[in-house]
Image 1 (tube, rainbow, N blue to C red):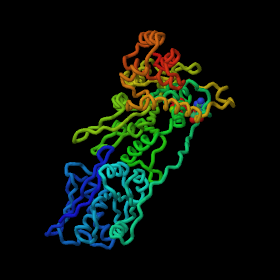
Image 2: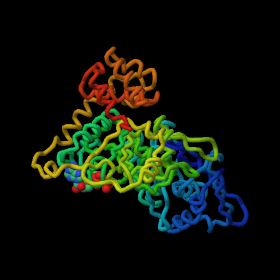
Image 3: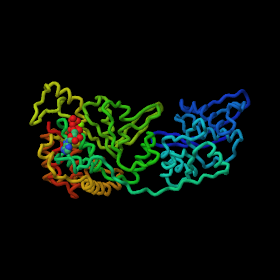
Image 4: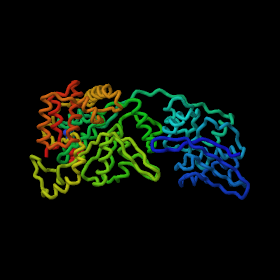
Length: 505
Ligand SMILES: Nc1ncnc2c1ncn2[C@@H]1O[C@H](COP(=O)(O)OP(=O)(O)OP(=O)(O)O)[C@@H](O)[C@H]1O
Ligand SMILES: [Mg+2]
């Protein structure tokens, strides 16, 4: 009789239980793994054999038997070394070196040659799947236990080594299941506070609006005017995450292998700043077993693209669909996968290659052709998806050296959180979280315009030559501005402020 043990495979951001069967047959020794394994699983043979031998048990290569390992379902691609532990245990079971009931138990872990167990990634979705499928006990590498314990309603057993697993399963040295620990309150820690950034009130206001309603922002200005500084300071005004958002982000980071074992929860909004040499795949995700890219890692947070025009044009164009839909579809050999991607795009650029176009103090040395070439890197459709276009001029000497401390980030964050609260209430039956996610029918419902407002927007559509998309984006932006002012209706001055952020040329 073959033995059977449960483990789990990742499919996008979710996991699915799989069965690991091991059979022993008469004949010359072979050790075969079947069921769409990748290279790392193929190599499990050597790790499993050494780990078993060094745990003072009899490894497959000393058994004089044909050892067949089957990972089922066979049509699901499986990857990584996380099946070492269940393969080893299933072998020990079938070769009658240990005896335990594998029902209701799920095992993951990589084996080191000496038999100790190494951490793996993707534990959070595995724990969620174990719970969803009604399995009771999850056995994980010790380092991953904290992450697994975030999912309530499962007994999590942290394992140090194959011998420790054996001793526990044989009830020789039982391991206590990990108790779920309450979360400590979050501490906001950030490098840059708005209080120490001088002047730039216009840009700060725009960042506040972007944070409040999840709107995209592009800051343009001469070198050294503080664009990068302002964008980085945006972390400090992002609202706290609710529990669902925390779990969602932790799952994404877990699948990407970016969870810290000591602090597994992602509790503050992600702020990702990929370099301008990044590839389209790094940004949107992909691979033969698709992994989330930067836009999914910044889901519910910020994707910061510094020096925006320096990115490859095809990389920037790959952002168009996710910016519109809030999801990204990654194709793979069998069908396609969808990852969430509701992020705030915060980008910076200089107005021209030398950086001084329209600067009152320094002359621009670029030819009109150079300026045009530089700007052409950003396509019209991409710019159309950006709600807030902000000019960041150089700070005057008097302002830079003044002793006046500006409004601290904590106070701005309070206003942002209030505005988010209003949006949460508004959309509680609509499945979205922020104004930027409103669909056409939501816009109709929540962005009603008074007659004077209608007059303003009508004129603006002509003067700014607004596209239908830009028109709807202006409405959503004015809804956020009204929310920040805690006004139920969109007033003319909310709308005119929103229009100020459209590109001026
Ligand atoms: N408003 C400001 N208040 C205080 N310091 C500032 C301000 N603006 C710029 N600085 C100082 O100048 C440095 C450079 O700013 P930053 O890197 O943000 O410029 P930038 O606009 O991104 O320039 P570039 O176009 O060259 O990338 C900051 O690290 C900071 O020390
Ligand atoms: Mg910069």
